[in-house]
Length: 286
Image 1: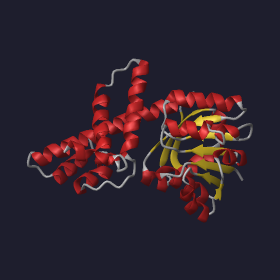
Image 2: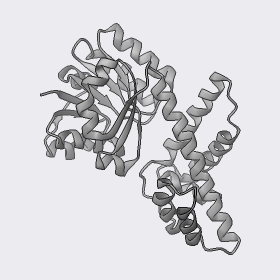
Image 3: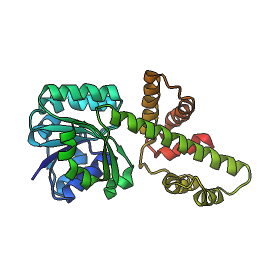
Image 4: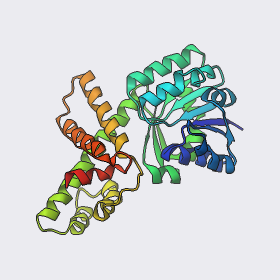
C-alpha cells in the first residue's frame, strides 16, 4: 500500500488528509501547530515530527499551506521537504502559489532525484470535505499517473496541464475571475438594497437567468445573513489576486478589473475581515 504524507492541516488540508485516511491509505501528517494533527491521528493517521520526516517515510507527500512564504519555509527550512525528498520520495504541492516559486521548488526536487508535481485545487471547504476538489496538475507526468488514487480520494477530477508553472498560472486565472464575480455580486446586492429592492429577490432572479452559478447559490445566503464562516478565507483571496496581478505584469497583460477588485479585498483585510470567508467583502462594499 502506498504511504502518503500530508503537510499543512488548515481548512483545506485537514479535509484532504482525512479523505486519504478514510480511503484506507497509510497517511503521515504534519502541521506547524501540532494540535491540528490530533483529530487526524485519532482517526488513523500517523504523526510526523517534521516535514523532512514525513517525506522520508512516504512515497508521495502532499502539501497545502497558506502562501508562497509558507511553501518556501516548508520546503527549504533545515528540516524541510528537501531534506527528505529523493528517489522514491516524491512531492506534490497543492497550495496556491506563484509559478516562479513552483518552478524553483521543482528544480530543487529534481536535483535531489525526486519527482515534483504542482496541483493547486479549485474548491473550498465543503468540496474538500466531500472529496469533490479539482486538481490543476503540472510537472512530472509519471507522478501525476502514480498519484491518481490519491487524487481520486480527494477530488472529482485531476487534469494534467503540462510543464511546471501551468498549474499555478491556471489557478491564478480562475481565482482572479472568482474574486471579480464575488465583488460584482456584492456590489449588485448593495445596489439593490439601497435602491429599495429586495436582495433575496435579486438572488432568485439571478438563479433563474443566464448568470446562474454555484458561487451565487453558495455565497448569496451568506450575504443576506451577513454571516461569513470561513470556507475560503478572504485574506487568501486577496493573496491570490495579488499573485494574479504579478502574473499579468510578468506577461504584459493589463488587469484593470482585477486591480480594482484587489483594492477592495485589501480594504476588507484592513477592516479586520481577513479570517472570514471571502464573501465578507460585502461588508466593505455596502
